[in-house]
Structure formats: structure tokens, C-alpha cells
Image (cartoon, rainbow, N blue to C red):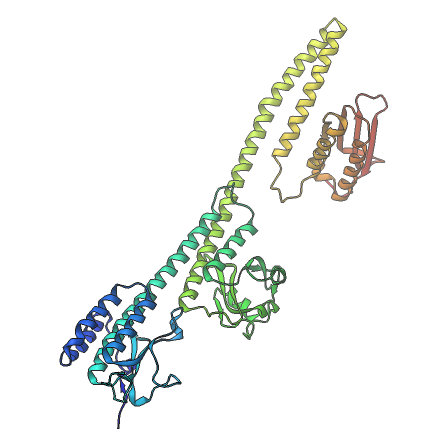
Length: 518
């Protein structure tokens, strides 16, 4: 009766002690081989040296299969790699299986597990030992103890090669994620000429996360005002219809996913569409998914979703760890970028305030003093043409002073997202009318216009002003908005547009103010 020679199960043994244990096992097997045919040792050592210097994993494993078949006289050799190993999974074969189904008889087979640091990566299997005849056909003989020791040495070498390949792949993967996080930080903190809106910054995070995770879709979700979370930035390689459906899509507040994200915990799913925690219709498009909290200083800003399509490769433990670290770094970069933008905006506003103060305290005061000198000279002038010329100069100075005041008001306006006050809107209408009138109208305000005039009355005033200035009557004009006016004994606002080059060119519009206004 013939038996199958098996290597002891490594799972039943205590975990090996790294490289020292591997060296000891290899040396033990080589000592066992020394008692057999010595002619096989040089070929074995040559193969081990070649495998140890070959950085191509598949080529190294093919060399191991060829060497095992050659040294043991096997008709068929195969290196099987477990699917859990990742990209290297599969079967590498050499020779021809001894039967038509590719499954040798157990009595003529030899199989040794391939391990590295206690983890089983696969196995090295042989079948069909050749006979002594000239045709080299298998004759049903079993493999010997020497064959077993030799195959163990080759399996140990295969384990080292596969372990090193996986460590190199993991190192490259970590480097790629670290470089990706650094590039996101650089992009978000770039100069003002390359940085845009907050939504664009979130899109950068979604795009880079999708690229690093080799996912079909990357999306950033933020809390929705009505509860739950919504997609505010997306990068996807799926159809435009799926993109449109996902963008601004919501995860309802009752979803367990939302509660887990708010608690600062990541959510992992091998099939998001079938996961009972996912109750959002968006999940039906995706399989393996990571929902990673964007967390900084203990506060959850939102979440980064990295999704592969249904049936796609599951995220490994390493990818989950690296993705979580990337999300934390991206959240920190978003906070820093937001603070950086705030500081830049503050610097701009401070600079604008300084310019406005300089214009008011220096330029306007000097122009006003010059205007007074010209007015005094005009009154003393004897010749009419001199008085007329000085009068025009005084008018021009008055118009210049008004233009500077308009510029000061514009400089003192708040952030662009804050709705402009009535003063600013009146100045904009006056500036827009310059093309029709041929010159910019002079604008004066009386009283606290922005504080006293409500929005509805302000809109009516602007409509009246726009219609009056749009009339086809070129020439100089003066606009006066008076918030201290009185109409029928009640506080009122009055708009006056005077055509300074026409005797009857005065337009007046007025409305009572709310009694509760200051």
C-alpha cells in the first residue's frame, strides 16, 4: 500500500521566529538531503540563489515549480497561491498532469504548504513520478523522503519570495497613500491663484481618495440641515446618470451608518447594496465600500465614501487602515485650508480698511481744501470767463470727491456672501448708468440709509432710480437718497435725481418708513 507524503501542518506548530526559524528549517532540510543523492544539491542551491535575487514573483515561482519537477522526477508540478493573498492569487504549473482530469492519484502525489511567518500562502504540489524507462512515463512509484525534504526547501524559498513580494507591495501601497495625502494637503493650501472654492477643495479629496483606493466612486458627505448626510462633492467613473443621482443624494438621519459616522467610527461593507445598515437608495450601485469619518480635533466634519462596484474586489485590512488615515489627514488639511482662507480674507479686509482711511483722511481732505481755495478765487474773479472756469473746476472736484467716497463705501463692504446694503446697490445703479448718461452721476446720502430703509422699500427705490437713469437723456446728474425726509408728518425716504444741465430735470420719489424704524 502506497501513502501520500505530507508536510506537517504549520498551523499546529508554534509561530516561527522570523528569519532565524526559516534559516533553521532550511538548514535542517538540507542536512536531510545530504544523506541522499548529492548530485541534486548543486541544482537546488542554484535555483535557491536565482529565486532569491529575482524580484518578479511569478517568474520566481515558475522557477521553483520547474526545479521541483526536475529534481524529484515529477511529471507535474504546481504552485497554488491562496486567493486571500491578493493580486498574486492563482496557479502556476509546470509539466503535464498524469491523468486527463489533472487530478493525480493520492498514492503518487506530494504536497507541501508554502508558509511565511506562520501564515499559509499556498502550496507546492507534485504528481506522477517518472519511471526509469526511456519514455519517462510515470510508473506509479511514490515520492521518497529525500523528495519530501527537497520540496520543503523549495517551499520555504517560495514562502520567502511571496512574503517579500507582499511586504514590498504593502510598502509601495503605504507610500502611495502617504504621497496622496501630502498632495491633497498641498493642493488645499496652494496659493490663491490655484485655490478655489470650498466645494472644489472637497472635490480634490474625493478625487484623490477614489484614485488611491482604486474605487469606482469617491464622495464627500456633510451633515444635512434637516438631519442625515448629503453628498456635496463626487468623483466617479460611472455613468452621468449615476453621478447625477448620487450628487446631492442623502443618507437619512435614521440610518445606522449616520450614527456610526457621527460617533467617529468608520463603516466597512463588502456589499453595500445588501448591507442591512444601508437604507439609502444610493447604495444599490455599489459593492465593497468604505465610509470614513472626516474627523479633526475630536469633531466629525463629514465622511469620505470610497465605493467599488458590485462584485468588485473587497477592501483589504491594509486598505481599510490606510483609507482611515487618509481621511484623518484630509480632514486636518480641510480645516487648515479653511483657516488659511480666513486669514487671507482678513488680511484683504484690513488692507481695504487702510486704503479707505487713507482716501478719507488724506485725499478727500486735500481735495476739499483745494475746492475751497478755488471757490474763494471764483468769488474774487473779475472776468466772467475766469469765474466760469473756476466754477467748472469746483464742480469737477466735487464729483471727484463723491467718486472717492463711493470707492470708500465699496472698500468697506463686508464679505461677498453678505447681501449688499442699499448704499452699495444705489452706487452700483449709478455706475451702471454712466454708459447712458456719458458720465457717472454724483451720489449723496443723508441719514442712516441702510439702517432705516427696509428691503421692500429699498427694492422699490432701486427700481425707480433704474428707470429714471435709463431714460434717454444724456448729461450730468445728481442722485440724492435722504433717509431723514418727512412725508405727511411721518418719517420717509426720498429719492431725488437732478439733471444739472436741464432746468426742469428733477425727478422725485418718496415713501413713508415703518414707524418702528430707528
